[in-house]
Structure formats: C-alpha cells, structure tokens
Length: 301
Image (tube, rainbow, N blue to C red; front, side, top):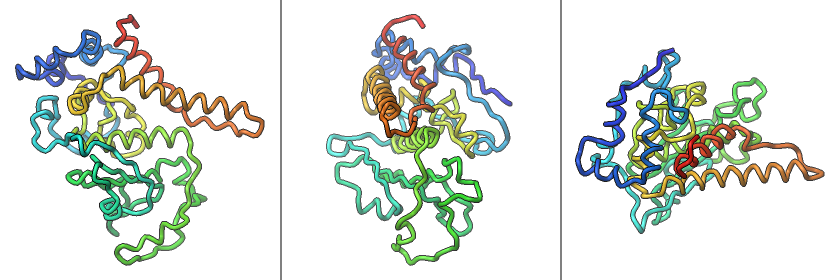
C-alpha cells in the first residue's frame, strides 16, 4: 500500500493559493472555519487523512492527471456557477438516458441527474459504465445496479435473460425492471456517487490531495474506501461557488441523517415493522460531522 503524503507547504498552497486576492478571500473565513480547513494540513489530523493507493488498478495509478488546486479551479473559465434563473439541482428516477433528460430538463435547472438501478452499456464493446454525463449541458445518468451486494450472484433477479436490440428512442426494456431492496450500504454508495458526479458538474476535478469524495475510483473496493465528505481543498472550491456557511452545510447533512435515524427507530418500535436501518452505514460520517461542528463552534475535540 502506498500513502500519498503531500508536504504541508504544498497543501497550504493548494488550499489558500499564492494569489493575493484569493489569499485575502481565505482570510475572510471565520477563525473556526479556517481552523477546520487547515486541519487537512496536519499529517496526524483525525478529520482529514492522506490518500492511500492499494494496487495499480486504483484510479491515481491508472489515470495520471494534473492535481487541481483551489487557484486552478477558481481560474478555470469552464467551471459552472449557478445563477438566479438556473440554480436548482434535479434528481430524476429514470430508466431512460441522456436524450430523455435533455427533454425533461427544466429551464431553472443548474443540472439534472438521472439515477437508475439498470446496468448501463453505452456500446457493445464496453463491459459497463457506472454513469454517463454531458457536463457542458449539465446532465448525467448514473446506475447503482452494481452497488447492490447481490449483483454478482448467479441468482440476481435483475439479470437480463437474453439480449434485446432496441430502436433508437425505444426504452421498453426498462418497463417493469427489477428494483432490489434498498440497503444502507447501497444508499451510502449512491449518495457518494451523486455527490462526486455533481461536484464534476460544478467543475471540481478528481482530488489527489487528501481522502475525499472527489477521489476517482476504478472499482467498487476503491469506491468504498472513498469517504462521503469533501476534503478542505474541494470544500473551499464548492463553497466559493455556492457561498454557503460551512457549519450550515454540516448541520443540514446531520439533520438529514438524524431524521433517518428517527424514522428507523419508529419502524423498529412499530408492531408490524421489519427492522430496516438505512442510515446504519452513515454512522461514521455522522460522528465525523459532529466533530467538524465542534471545531466550527470553537470547541476542543
């Protein structure tokens, strides 16, 4: 296993920048916001760890890319920024693909993302893809089929029994398609993929700085190692576009998880309820958010 440990000075420059105006912007963050983001500069940080490469098949080994620091992200003329009339992210459950999304995309959409449990094969010569996207048009479709633990079993109910060649625009193969039970692991994997791909639509490239949801992944094992959160450098990229308060973002995520936990407890206590725990896989991330909020609120953790 290889650990990518960048020098503190390099991480500092990637986060803050060498441009005077961007340094001044960084200084406008509150003391506690800077304290949180600068946690990623410390080699022994309990919140932000280094990237680990486990094999040559991992993303960084097989896809050489120039790392994107904050300054290069901010200066990129092709990065996307929501505007007042186009500031909504739509998530559409579909069995269709990009042409369908293009017709369905509302005028106020910053982007529209289709999600499906159907395995995607854009060409006969391809094995499969987790997703397809047109980032310039703010559209993407992503399959979570292979995130189901039972996908590779011989008895998987969603497996096609025979090939079917369709005419262009004919999506009848999706009618009545098998949808597996939603497990906690599948939900976590799906949330990470959506966060990652929508991050690309904003113009954030694959992260090579710290453990981050924007890391690339070549296979499911590598995707599972990827955390659900943004590292400080990618967090600053997203914050610079959307202008949110970091604490507000973390509180909203925590509230969503705690609402899910409350729903789990209600289901468990109901006489006819089967014990389903969709938030179980999020427990580590929930504790991570609480620790980050303790930093943002000036506490010692």
